[in-house]
Each structure stands twice: as C-alpha cells, then as structure tokens.
Image 1 (cartoon, rainbow, N blue to C red):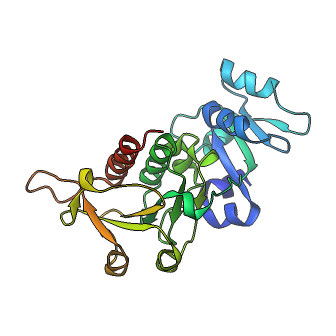
Image 2: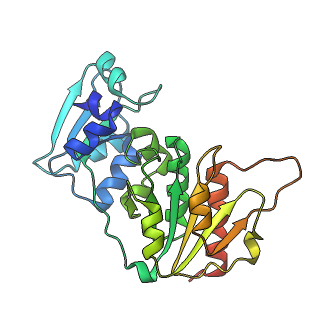
Length: 248
C-alpha cells in the first residue's frame, strides 16, 4: 500500500490515506490530528533519530509500528536520502470558513508539486484563509507537495477539483487576476477580504476566460526582458502584500 500511496493520486483519493516522510511532517500532523490507526514504518537498518524515537514512544495504542528492512524502506521512501521514518495516515479534512469573510488564492494549472507546496506553505504563513485548486493543478497530498508545504496542508483549507469559473460567478467579493505584464501594480491593489486572487501555472498563466472574469488585474513590476516569475515567488509577493496591508 505504501508504494501505491507514493506513486498514485488515484489511490490516495480512493483510500483516503496519505504518506508522510520524516519526523517533521509526522509531528506536524500529530499536532493537529490523531495518529490513532496510523501505520509507522521504521527503517530497521539505520539508527533512528531522537525525533523519530519520540514519535514512536508517544503513539496511541491503536497505531502500528513496523520495522522495514533497509532496502525495502529505501524503495518506499519518496526521497533520495531516506529519513528513517514514514507514516501512513488518514488524509485530514481542514474546515473552510465562510466565503464572505475569506481572502482566498485560486490556482489554475500549477502542475509542479514542489511549486504548489511552496505556495501552500506561504499561504498558511501569511494567513490566507483558503486555497482553491483547479483540476489541472498537482495533487496537494502527494509526498513531494507535502514536503514543499511543510505541514501547511494540515492547517490550511485546500479544496481540489474546483470549477473556478463557476466559483467566481457565485463569489460576492472582489475577483483579482494576476498577469505578468498588464494591470495595476500589486502595491496599488487593495487586497481586502472578501477577495479571490487567481494565479496561473508555470508557463501558460491564467486562461483568457479566467482573466475576463476578474474585476481587476494586477501585476508585479519586473525588469525589462524578464518574462515572468516562478509561481511560488509570485504567490509569496502577493501573500506578503496582503499581510502588509492587513497585518491583524
């Protein structure tokens, strides 16, 4: 099962389970959710860390701990240098707040798990209320995206497979689209809630339909000759500007 969870988004959706690699992610999960029923895989061929030992010692009685031979553990681990501990846990559900009070990011076509994880990590740190993902985005529960998010998925409401056009039609707040070179400068945009900020994926950006649905288009001023920013960097600037305008 661990291999299937590692490689298959379909299996993660079907089973409702995810794979967490490393003591940090497992501890972050445990701070917010129950490890009852978790399956903990420990590399039997390596020395465990104090953090891993602490996790195992604090597990509820219903959790299972399995010693896995070194070669097999390396095959299951999603990283080149395995950390020595993996957890198979239930995918958590983080509740959404009321749309009328939210400042949201809507991501379309963000296909690289590392980039998506970075955006989620920044959104959680900058007190974004929710993130909406179109069907063309990467799986936020893949091991690589979870590592990039560093636990953001455990505290930030993330909704997948969202029809963004329909959502925008029904949304009663401000709809902002991001563009590489057109629109008002980000520092001039008022990012008060309720609002949805749309950010397009690597290369293609937002579709013409999503751009047309926006009330306002904003851009991040850049030096001449630079085509665009990495989506993670762009999202970080947008989130920080929102945090700067409304720190409380």
